[in-house]
Length: 357
Ligand SMILES: NC(=O)c1ccc[n+]([C@@H]2O[C@H](COP(=O)([O-])OP(=O)(O)OC[C@H]3O[C@@H](n4cnc5c(N)ncnc54)[C@H](OP(=O)(O)O)[C@@H]3O)[C@@H](O)[C@H]2O)c1
Image 1 (cartoon, rainbow, N blue to C red):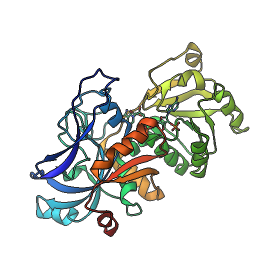
Image 2 (image 1 turned 120 degrees about the horizontal axis):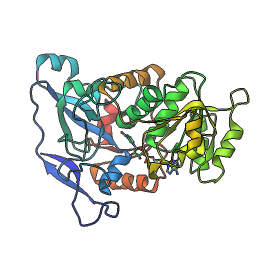
Image 3 (image 1 turned 45 degrees about the horizontal axis):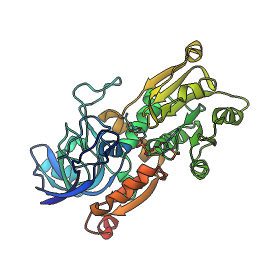
Image 4 (image 1 turned 90 degrees about the vertical axis):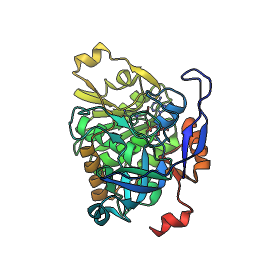
């Protein structure tokens, strides 16, 4: 048997309910041909787990353990070839299924790992059986919590920044809500690609920390005139934004169409504050485009991990707790939005196990 974390069904309407976490014992998974068994060392949270607990996410499932992000060690393989390739390796797990390489979107039925229908496991469980094709070696320069932080947020940020945002060296880009997991990956990717990055946050301290990570400057979105303030910060020789990468929604187009160049692009990968965006005629007249962007394909996942390796990028981890029984502590941080970066739950028997790898 193994321990896993699911949500418990309680009464309540979507948006008003907050399903409690429940630790359960489940049969340890057995592997089929082509699969490997991974002992999970750490799992990271994404905002979707909060939405799942609030019943604001499609296809939630009370039996499937939560968690899309995981790092672990391969402890069992289904063939000599897989044993040679993977046994004993530290790996990160892909967070999606059903999307190989099509740039426009999934080729088939798409599903995200953890807490929903479509995939029968999550990463907040001690062992996961999965096809070996869903693994990438964990970048060697990362700690266990840093590696756990990569999959879902890294992939979402990768697609938003490069596939949809088409970011290039020298571009001016605005990344909103910089304390968020996806936003921080987008910042690190954009800085590594040679762009000039501006950020927004609800906290001056988070703006200061983003500057330490390479952001040129930032403004507080709680100030009504934040976009006017941002205009004053743009470089004199290039006083416009090429791209906005946004996870907040609401009035993002109204706030930024005046700062964007003609034909500028707003990439929307989420709508945390308001699930609708107003698109005014003034944005049409500037040929502004808004592009929806989700997680990404298996191909983009490989590209993203290779970029992380190439540039020695270290994901920003805000808080790590040890043990499934303490997961609620990091959920509370995410609910309050006080984090700067990813929230991680270490599994393993003790911290020493992770340190030895
Ligand atoms: N489509 C997809 O496949 C996909 C994938 C991943 C994520 N998402 C979505 O993207 C969003 C972010 O996900 P995440 O996991 O990165 O969440 P997260 O770590 O919880 O971050 C959320 C961030 O939102 C920011 N925020 C709050 N109010 C804001 C406002 N008025 N304006 C600008 N930013 C504001 C906060 O930034 P500060 O702390 O700096 O104030 C906060 O840190 C969620 O809605 C999530 O569902 C979608």
